[in-house]
Length: 110
Length: 111
Image 1: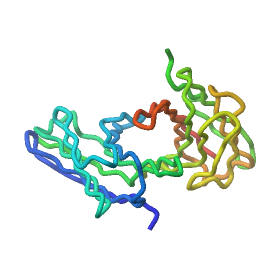
Image 2: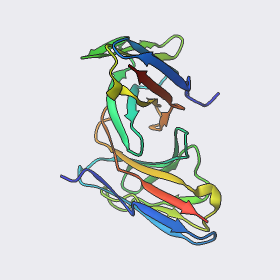
Image 3: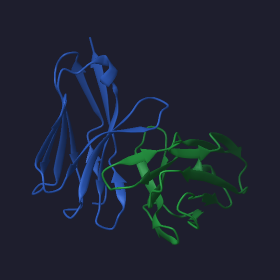
Image 4: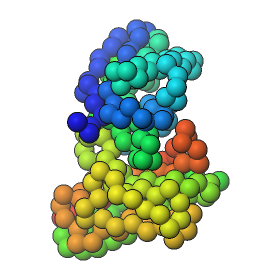
């Protein structure tokens, strides 16, 4: 289908790792992104990966890309309560359309 | 450097009224995008532009129009507002494809 899919909810204990998954649609997408949205706020770019890479690490964040399966994941190490938010993946298609996923609500409990 | 500025922040429209949502960026970005986000949902692409004078439809263009006469401005026009257009609207701009800047959003209610 045309939708970029994510699971709706993820609940983790503080200090554990979180893994948020995304299945995108266009194998020719050039960039893939992860955004964070806190309640009532706009979107904050967390990290991105170019399609010729399979992994990118940025402090507590690790992005894995499986182009064959069109699967993207975001791992947050040592998850904190401040990480509670909605996380969106997005793909930049070669038509220059930037398409967002359905969003995953991450809840971190003590 | 203001980034991406959207106005107004809030608006209530009556069914059938029209309005223009303004989006301005001061970063000389070529790429600009309009999205809507319904409650509890993701962002849907309405229209986008890869440069002045060029616009293209996104996923949900019906009921909207855009223009891009300058690099800085990308207004979104609603004609004949309908309750289904109640949403939060976000504008975004890019210089390179790796870095997108979003406005703070316009919350629109159509009653």
